[in-house]
Length: 213
Image (tube, rainbow, N blue to C red; front, side):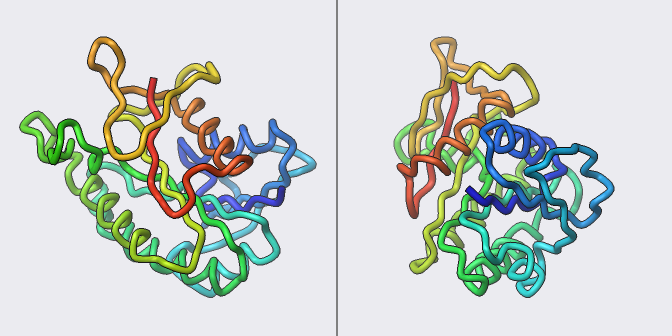
């Protein structure tokens, strides 16, 4: 498949890029600074693009089978609010380019930990993470209002970090996935596997799903 990957140079974006190339897909990595992509591969093209500009998105993704956005503002960056703005421009750009499918990295905080109780509303949820978590929740609301585009939003477990590529994970929809110890974790590598599995064999069209161990 021809995959356009927004924000391919970040922690999760790099893993999605690696997984997509490993599977033999043709990938266009779309970044603000192409020098940040040092990987060489015959199936990789690197282009400059701005996720905040509809026209820039449309130009970069036209002709692809699917778009994946790994964009997400860093914790404590002060730029958390920009995620909703980026999401709106991304959706408009993808639709303008005539690409039918968009997948995006989401957040875990809007998942339920008990009936009617979201992770972000629990007493132990870190204050420093709340601005980013709130932005991801609001971005998900933007997706849920989109009725034309075939979108999918993938929420990670409560903790996601670079780690081992095991190829094993569990999926859910609205509830946080925890292991037998009550912990919620996924490696960035296995998260990327789940993302590409959904690209290749769609199961969660126009909805959010989540992964964890």
